[in-house]
Length: 292
Ligand code: OGA
Ligand code: MN
Image (cartoon, rainbow, N blue to C red; front, side, top):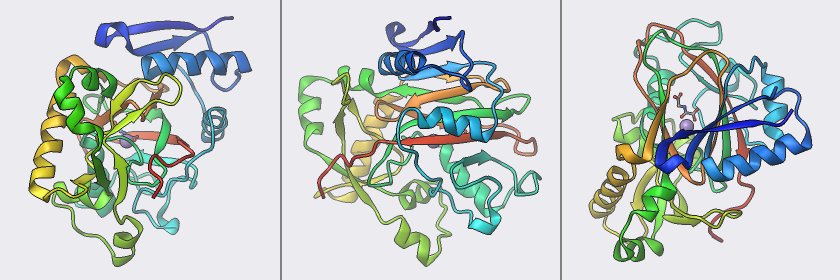
């Protein structure tokens, strides 16, 4: 049966689509090609009713490229609830209990509520993220997505020229620092030393240009820090206006897949005493954007 793809309607019907008529645990090569074509066009795909386990999620994700390890969080191996192939996007400890309000891993995880592109703080950032909803709170906890192609296209030629050659420093020390979270170990400070990424990138397949923004940005190379932060803040404000954004309201067993190369996303607030459990697999971009 062919896939069914319905645009969500954001950004002139070119941002976000729902994919039905498919079981992600049982796909053909043709399905994978159709999904790749759809994500190139819509950037975010929603697959409702996909009741999968971690192994099935990993196997499906791996059809789109090499997998990233979940090395972006602060859980030591002995504290991990999930295998290192799976990013634990939850508010639960390894026994399944809801984290206390002042728990360090929880406070670190609040960084996901800032607009970002996954793993932009790694020299090789993420291509696709796939997020599976296992437990969702009764209210709140949406994920919002912003289209960085539309945001780029809406800039004036002068603004585009100003952005084109700029190189940004990305680090989780910056994104968490912006929330006042400074509780890093010496080891984490070394592990998350800033990496350089261009501010403007081109999608390898569609050739679309987009803004490579992320709350992980702390400065622009050769710029004074306050000026760089203001510039990035202004651009982020521009890029996350309502007309480039849609909100996904989670239902249990939704699987949402997005292309980090052309989008930003953020989580929204919910009652932190209720469990929220999402599992993320991440497909790597495989190559660096800059040579050094
Ligand atoms: C992520 C993420 C947002 C959310 O999984 O990468 O940022 O709503 N999640 O949990
Ligand atoms: Mn994320």
